Length: 199
Image (tube, rainbow, N blue to C red; front, side, top):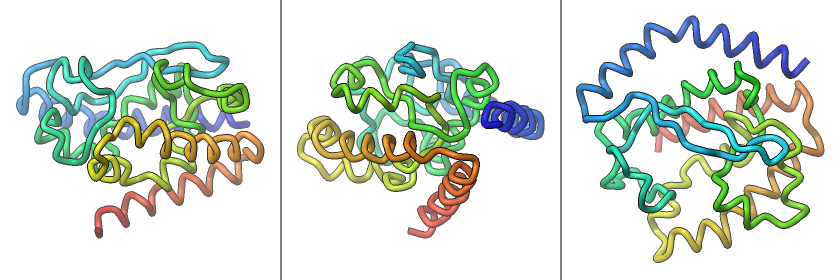
């Protein structure tokens, strides 16, 4: 049932959103030099790496430094990128990952290998399900970049405070996942993005 929902929803979103996606691609090309789609290796179900797709929101080669974005005014973020990130539009290409079966609409957000290698055996259980476009942690930490911007050591704050809490929420999802829970998370995600715009 979950996989069928993922296939149908991703097909609908990709078809309906195609004209909008082409417009975004044009804006990215005009705004800065580089590719439209940014691909990054993330860890998926059963601890298998896959290529996650996003609209590029940073300048080329920005990921050669820190893999943590520090605030909305991170100098690496392009003008159009700031807008795309604010409304989570940069995640649109991940519906291709969902269609391919690498991701689900709802599930623990996929992490980079560097941080997954720090997981405890218990935390590794989050890799028993497909990673998702949104989850409980995405809702709680909708302003994560702003939180990290206030830290003297953003990466240490992420590893010691934010990541463990995210993993607790992810394990909660693994235990109680259902279509009803997925629909609730999708609705709460939409509300979180709207409320973020009001802040």
